[in-house]
Amino acid sequence: MKASEIRKMSAEELDAKLLELKDELFKLRFQQTINQLENPMRISAVKKDIARLLTVKRDIELHGSES
Image (cartoon, rainbow, N blue to C red):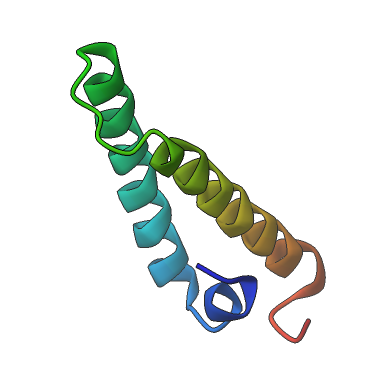
């Protein structure tokens, strides 16, 4: 997910996507623990997506939606 795609989302969509990604990260970590994870790189990709969402969300809080 790219930052430009994230900036086009509304606040409600950002919150929903953040919850979805956190849930996916939990499930991936659980799969990793029981050795059923097929793609270990997916964990880092999800973590980066969460960081992007939080960064854009904070940017909107500080500067408003015009940035």
